[in-house]
Amino acid sequence: MKYKTIGRTGVQVSSLCLGTMTFGNEADEEVSRNIFDRCRERGLNFIDTADVYGNGRTEEIVGRLLQDCRDEWILCSKFQGRTGPGPNDRGCSRLYLKRAVEASLRRLGTDRIDFYFIHNFDPLTPLEETLCGLNDLVREGKILYPAISNAAAWQIMKGLGISDRRDLPRFECVQPMYNLVKRQAEVEILPMAQSEDLGVIPYSPLAAGLLSGKYMSPGTGKGRIADNQFYRARYDEEDYRETVRLFIAFCAERHWNPATVATAWTGSHPAVTAPIIGARNVEQIETALGVIDFDMTPQLRTEITALSKSPPLATDRRDEQMGMFLH
Ligand SMILES: NC(=O)c1ccc[n+]([C@@H]2O[C@H](COP(=O)([O-])OP(=O)(O)OC[C@H]3O[C@@H](n4cnc5c(N)ncnc54)[C@H](OP(=O)(O)O)[C@@H]3O)[C@@H](O)[C@H]2O)c1
Image 1 (tube, rainbow, N blue to C red):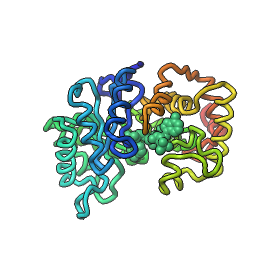
Image 2 (image 1 turned 45 degrees about the horizontal axis):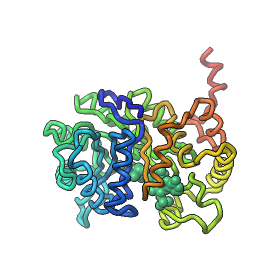
Image 3 (image 1 turned 90 degrees about the vertical axis):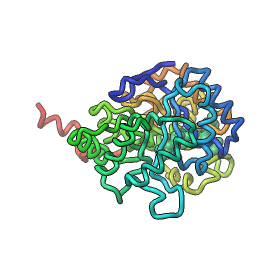
Image 4 (image 1 turned 180 degrees about the horizontal axis):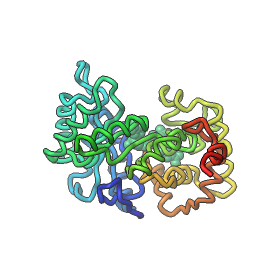
């Protein structure tokens, strides 16, 4: 297993992060433990969860899994999603943050969360307020590093600017969606992360299962995209289906498992620290762990990238046109 420094922290994390969204959902506690044990055997030391997964059940399971080995693992959790019916049972206010972290620590059975992510940007709370709240938690030792998921680059940069100006702990890690069909992160977030030395742990490297190829014949595949309308809508684009067809043919010619190759592709962007892998059973996690022995060369990455449509440039202006102003 390869370990990498995350952000400017000096912390060494495995180049795969174990996602736990299925724990207590598609995977019962025994299966979750088998997935966790397998990842531990292969050298993973990095785990991601959130307060909203399984309405708190997931964090409880993660807490029990880490009971005897907490210090081996770098633990990420998230807050901001709704956890109750009240107007303040969600969000990024200092008021809610305090309650959210205490509840997560209780479920996780630990005294600290290592990377604490804002799950989604909260338009109702100024970032300064949230960063001051996160600073309090760092001072209290309840979290070590603030982090942010699903945010636009300008929101992340705004946060970094506030931290710098106010001498507050900065976001050390970002968690965008990133896979062969959803490549928006390449435009702003990944270059920003390289420029600012941020850790990057992208989620959904398999496009929620789509890139395994199991949905190629309509109505046949079983899993999240078949079961969940929200995910079905997210990936319901003809361009994506075309990329999946090309990608599956590309892997089949070489006798490669597409789930392994898709995860390796996400992990091979130079800005990426560790893709977050997810599974409902041990067979699925094995395909993701195949990445450890898979050699995704820059040439291979280029060939696979060409199977999907590139997102438009951030400036709507092509590099070759820029050249005439630079030279
Ligand atoms: N920050 C956020 O907003 C956010 C959002 C989503 C996820 N996450 C984190 O990222 C982790 C990974 O995300 P993800 O689950 O969306 O990742 P993903 O890799 O895109 O999808 C994983 C899913 O694909 C299917 N799968 C896996 N291996 C397969 C195989 N070999 N063949 C066929 N199907 C296979 C399984 O679902 P089925 O069996 O149901 O098809 C599995 O649960 C989560 O656990 C969570 O920790 C964060």
